[in-house]
Image 1 (tube, rainbow, N blue to C red):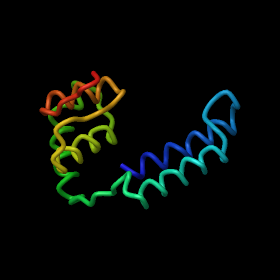
Image 2 (cartoon, one colour):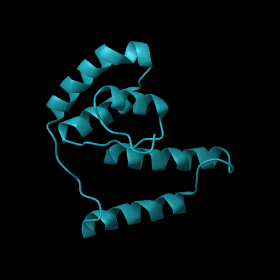
Image 3 (cartoon, rainbow, N blue to C red):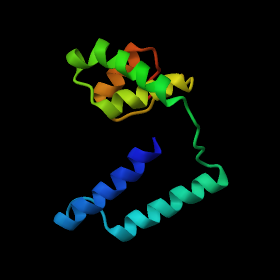
Length: 112
């Protein structure tokens, strides 16, 4: 999700402003945003539209079925619901809870 990527950059700038050992500078974030924009323009990254209502309905069903027992966060569930909606077969994550849920719903997790 493009929003979470760009939001995470802004959070890192905030963290850096509070403690220079955390996050990264505004300049570094701006360079990453520029790279991201360039990657979209050149087709390295493709923004794919989806049916948001359908994704949210599926995310709600995943949440009801799995979050109370697995401790899943809302954006993690939304990412998985979006992946399924878009027909993904594999899902990459560093989050062990998200990986566990991906496996439960039938997505491959090649690096887990």
